[in-house]
Length: 72
Image (cartoon, helix red, strand yellow):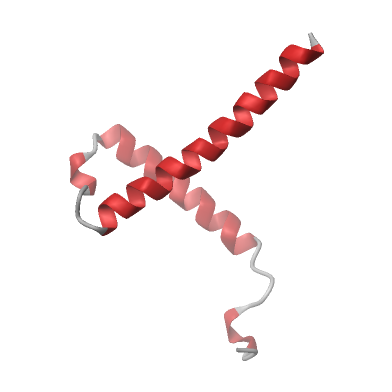
């Protein structure tokens, strides 16, 4: 039973990593003009946008230095 839980956790972690790879791939395809956002179904576009917003919120909450510190 414990072995099965470990495998499920490992699979979940791999899925998370793979999702990140897919997000990066989509960003690259859009940046080089191979893919347009309008090529995607509305449901996929909605999910991509929700995930980008969530990542942006997380990135903002982890920002330890504000932009106006004048350090750089």
